[in-house]
Image 1 (tube, rainbow, N blue to C red):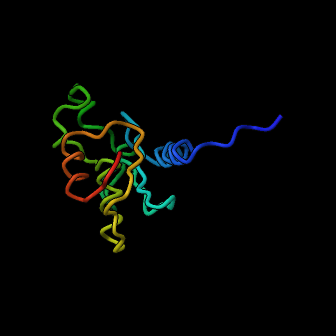
Image 2 (image 1 turned 30 degrees about the vertical axis):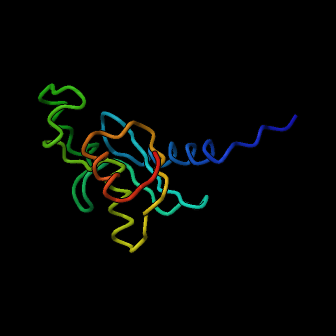
Length: 123
């Protein structure tokens, strides 16, 4: 018996879930990929800025303070997966205008605004 071939959406979501496994966040592993014309443009996962210690190494301040998920995001040391994907595209000169964003979780309001302004056409 042969395994069913995944649709393009299923294929990209499976890759997005694999990207999320790179996250070092202690609370939630999130992955994002930008796709246009069935080609992956860039990826991102949640974690601290390049060069800073990972939450898995130094702990999570929001956990220590008992702050619920989704609140006080300004004290989180990490960037969101969607932000990292957009930043990677900008850093390497890749246009993500009219691309599709695949993400393992629903984007927060801040990421949603960035997604709109980046010209991403679909989530």
